[in-house]
Amino acid sequence: METTLTKVPSAPQPVAREVRLHAYLNDADSEAVLRRVADSLSGTVEVRRGDVRTATRDLQKERSPDVLLVDVSAIDLPVSAMEGLASVCEPNVRVIVVGDANDIGLYRQLKQLGVAEYLFKPLKADLVEAAVLGAAGPQAGDSGGRRGNLIACFGARGGVGTSTLAVNLACYLADVERRRVALVDLDVHAGTVAFLLNLQPGHGLREALENPDRVDEVFLSRALRPASERLDVLACEEPMADHIETRTDALLDLIDKLQGRYHYVVVDVPRALSPAGRAVIERAGLRLLVCDGSLAAARDVVRMRNAFEGIGTGHKTLTVLNRKGAPGQLAQADLLKALGGAPDHAVDWRPKPLAQASCIGTVAIKECKTFRASVARLAQAVTGRPSKAAGLFSRMFAR
Image (cartoon, rainbow, N blue to C red; front, side):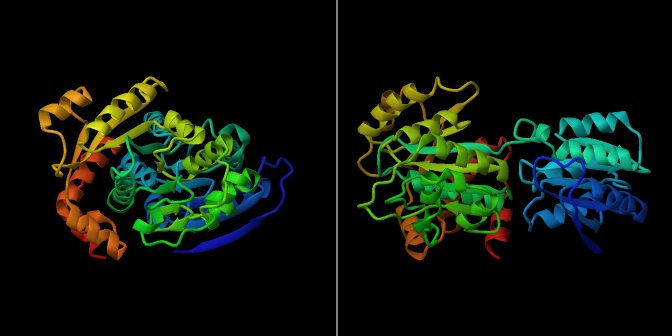
């Protein structure tokens, strides 16, 4: 692959911010046009020889740029290729597509996928400049870009396994579904997310909550701890004596920034709901309400469902019965009566492999096939797609 790095000088018509643009083009003439356009930008342009498939391969390992220009010339199924690219791009990336045909049908299909603009060859400098500036400008900000899905995991009572489910669901979405995932533990004093993933907690979450003005792309890159290739974690373990005020506006702003970087933002919300925790639940497009089979948990499921189910148009609350079959639980008929119906999902009780996974600092879906299958079904409800075949698990976790 041939790579050219060009530092772009200040433009006479600058966009509102420094922009990183990556371009994948498969011919020298198109590259030459883009380099001329670079003089009108403020930021960094990187030109690589290749097409949409090259971009998809690279972005599986790299952070996405602000603006991405990809070539679909000579691609037999350009829409399918773009769908593959969308699965690895961060949600807030603005994409410009270059093709070799003036095809209105293709243009409409690409626009439905969220593509900012479609240009056909031979490229003209003025059209390329307008497309890039349009994609990079303020009008292409939060309102125009895709946003990652926010998932709030919270327990009807403490100790029902909410953090374990949040961790394993996030790992499944990242390592099996191959999506970029941020996992946030809102319990700043006694959270267990970092512990379950064998990560050293940092102080980034506390700093983000106490000094929201500091939160930018550089801050997030340093604060988030990588748990795997596609899973980043934001968790801390602050001294119990410290009083930490979780400002609702600061937390929501942080989550908003994460939704621009990740396909899924999974938040483990503590049982003792603070105003900020409640705000996260209210904003979340999907709420996973976790309980066990006790009478107290069933009672609180009904209360919490009533509290949050009617908040937010199009938001969904799923009840997850964890530790199904554990000793001391209600009989099935009594549990269904207490819950007011069957739970949306059930996770079987598997204490030994889960305890073993916790002791060795690995995720339980790697150690227990039954638990893994339960998490796969839950992930299917999250993504709306069929779960991956069993063979994929062994390939992913054998690396």
